[in-house]
Length: 335
Image 1 (cartoon, helix red, strand yellow):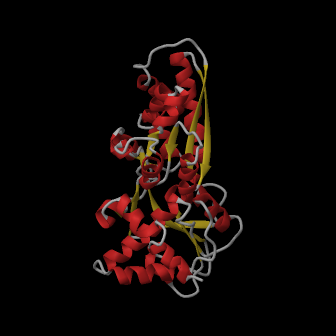
Image 2: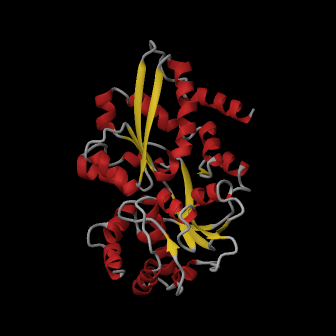
Image 3: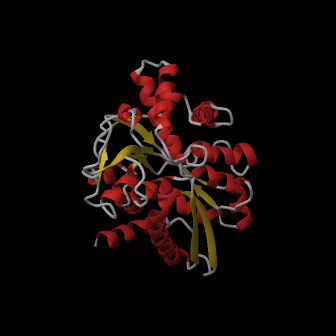
């Protein structure tokens, strides 16, 4: 009954769209790793509503991978109609490096084009040899930590900034102390997968590592699914507010004649129906009513933003993740 009511919520979001003769329409969404199951459900509901409103048969294709890798694929010609990536800097790159969308893309949708939020948590083995409670435990001697590679994964950049930001605040803004902490943490990382889902697989299925640092939604999927009874989530006292953004890729949507449906698709993510689906896939809804309804799923947590600690995503990207940045220097120190 809940899903039926949610489907009815989709229709008002489409009422302003003109009815056209039925035709076949295809949309490509290039997305980041942990959204696979989420968009499977979103696409089924939206396509059905679009058919009812316009008569068009809509097929939505989704490509998943590490967010940075996905952004590069679009820049190099993977002609996505929309991108739903992990970090704003990856969508900024579509403008900066290829002129595929306008510089102000983030102002075109609510909440800086972020339809939901997430955070970074720890996943540890129930009864395992290592027990962690806070960020500093991850840098301890003998702790094996699994995390993806910030050079290819947007989730990995959130993880890195969560750790660095926590250390900056603990050390009253002292960059050298924060850097030493992050260097030690990454020395404890034996495997850096290309994407967040790969890191989860390494930890859960390949049984490597004592602790996984990752997206909250991935951790909840594990403890409520394939890892039920074997793993437990640790919420540190403070983490980062993750804001994965979405955007129409103007150049390709115009070429394909899909701008109208692409815009409607992304607007749909803000509707009550889509926000309910997001929560069921363990993304924190941005719609206050949906967030209240699922408050028991998502513990209250002190979170800082990239803007508060690092100035902006552009600044964080340049300082920490561009070629020769702090992460590259840290990575070299691991060898």
